[in-house]
Amino acid sequence: MVPVCRPAIRPGLNKYMSYGNAFLYFAYGSNLMSARLKARTPSARPLGRAVLPRFELRWHKVGADSTGKCDVVFTDRPGDFVHGVAYMIRRAELKHLDRVEELGTGYYACNVPIRIGTRRQLARTYRAIPTDPDLKPLDWYKRFVVHGAREHGLPEQYVARLARTSAITDTDNSRRMRNLRIV
Image 1 (cartoon, rainbow, N blue to C red):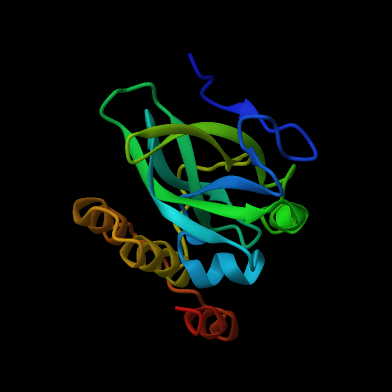
Image 2 (cartoon, rainbow, N blue to C red):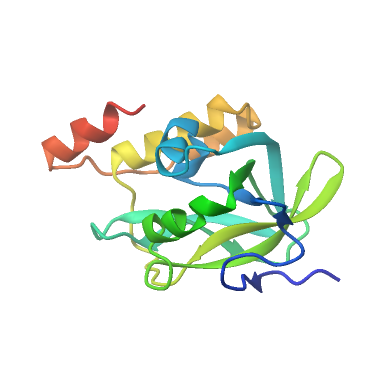
């Protein structure tokens, strides 16, 4: 049986997810949006839709701005799953991705079993360290997630559930406008 979340071994890769000079990454939150992920890791190439079974998406990760960011939580329920996108990324960009994902303080890296079509593979992803179930995402952050889900053709029912997530309007208008320009 494949572990639910095998810690990623520094320098960030192990035999299950290393592909020469690249690694397989499972995006499920704001990194679903190609423009956002490519700004962080220019080599990111989407391989297609992927599913993380027995997990659910939550918006409870404590962001640097004290609002909710996405996380995946293991439930072990057969009907639970998180839709996302599998990306191939150059290994040289891993350190930067770890930094923007706040590795060690905001998220920890791990390898999770995903399905890409009928294939099962281990992929690197990030899981939240500090969480608060009462948090809500900022409006522009939620738009990143919903836009990315639509961009990659995730199931409409799943996208509709993402779109129904309650969000708060960012009162920092400069930050809000800067982020909305990306969408």
